[in-house]
Image (cartoon, rainbow, N blue to C red; front, side):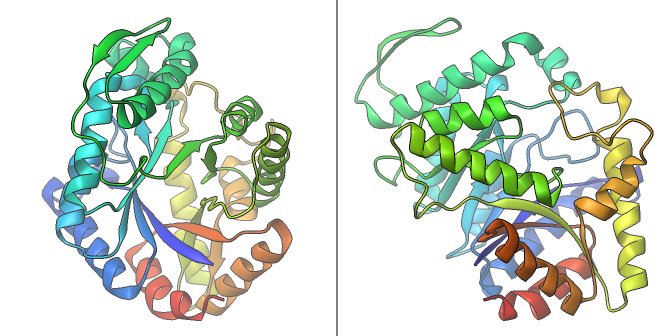
Length: 330
């Protein structure tokens, strides 16, 4: 099983100096490199203290400079908010500077505050996302790019640099809805899943992706499908549950709250249900190291989990994951 970390840059209640958020994350990334994690996936968000990393490509350069073997994933590049040629250039440059260690994850975003302030109409988010992905891939693989779409038109432009990995870095699409899964599979893309879907929903989405791949003439064999899971680990189950509850409340308040008026989010709790409890019961892996290891192994058996993308909810969780779970994973 591969294991990686989904690195958020949270600034809860702005209790510390902002610079320390980045310093702490980079220290963790150095530990990941030494400990044997497969990758770090850097989370991009805007206009919210939930995660204060507006450029995963700039952060990726720093991460690459401090590591030697860890792969650098974008989790994700929010494609509709970029000019596609600039996005192609930045990711290709990161791939070269990292020595060919980029995992490119792309997504369309969901926070309405981002769409509004970047001037992207939410009803254009899907079409802009699709066009941007197509343009980036063509820019990487064609000597000169010509493209005619709804939003972008180019004729014979040479996009440099080309990425080090040929024909291009491995690519994943963030996919939550059935429509997003179907589009990605129809194009032969692998997908990123989570971290807000229930374990059961993740299993169903993995199966749907495999079926749609086969229907489109592609194979599901040999693919890495990172599944993001929120983790709360402590030496006692009670303390882990407290961390998990605080983390769930933080997510509901700052990430899925009404102030964001999310676009296309379909993983809310049922009417009348407690959304925090939903995370505790169906989403977050929490408990002692032994209990969480058992949960991970059970998910491997039940839904075929083979690439765990961990989102630790505390520093203690990260250290216990590194020291007591990573060495024992099958």
